[in-house]
Image (tube, rainbow, N blue to C red; front, side, top):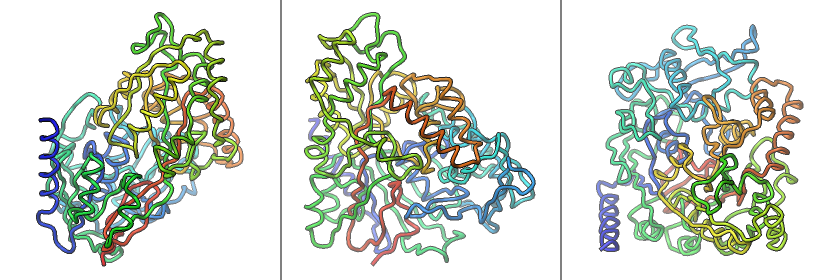
Length: 527
């Protein structure tokens, strides 16, 4: 019955995709849906991908990764005060309901994004105040000069203040706490597409915004978007092969050649600005999911290093990923300021040395542990986890795998309910500070919201915070190198690989692969 219900659901989804399609309709599918429409509740790739169609930040990255104007037309540090960035706003912009966009909306949105429930607060942790200087100019005041402030704002979406107040949406949705709000399912942006309908995990329909400020600056050839999450890889590919969808972001690696060799279809690929890795609970005195009483094996760096040595990244690359990945030695993509070949050296797989390290740490007989893994977020996420389970078993660590959809997986990290977990991390700022703020800094009100390891190093925290106000770029880069050296020494994460993106589409669609895996349909052209 379970298989029958899944088949019926998939058939129903494909039927819905095909409905109302026209020559200017783009039928879009990927493995997982946006988690929420609240633009500040979740800092997550597919969530941002949908938001970018409807809402806009002050500055944006185009499809090549270059920062370009969006709701701001230009920006510069203040000539009078080095702690201030000045942004001139675009005039004549309206929200989808016709309301005028101005500086009041920007100030409101930034203040909202700095609140505790916001998942965007680390991006703007150095901001002390955002103030309006007339209707179309804002000043961002930071705690010390911030040399990379614009890079932090490419996913910081602007909401209509009046709309939020009228719909009881001033407060950011507490996603981890299971809260549902008006802003979670409704949106009023300034973006190129308006929300027509939204059925989470089923179907979202967007229509071109006829009053979009950029309608003469961008191709805007797509007039309707029908977005359908299809978790099952075979069903997703079948939808593309049959013509039920026009564009899928995640062609399974085993189906790339099949899609590429089908008349009228193509796969375009590029390295992604993202690393896949595992996090370890290093701080609890005793773990909930292991079989060792009164002690946490992963609090011992020798155990963490043994686990790192046991993982055969080349085998994952060849067998699981079919060469559609690049083995990694650090949780930082090569796109990012701070990356070096030396840091990204992949450790040699050495089962015997790993066993010896475990024995030295007092775990010669091994131990058991639970691994939490998503099954609809990253390319081959569950198969990667299955492979790692086998590899750790070779050194005596018996891993129980629990794979869940991302909507259930991510709250485990947010609520510190996991001892061992998979995570992928993209870096929209292209700077190491972003990684440190979210993943390395001690977890607190302003930093560390995705640091589920419990790792805390006060000296490192000070260095991390200093990056936001260091204008001597050589000195700043030296500090970044020092932080990475400590992170690598302490082995709080187990890097696996840099993802490679495979976008599948009909030959009707013309685009390039966005390194952030965020298609922006205003740039797409249709043949």
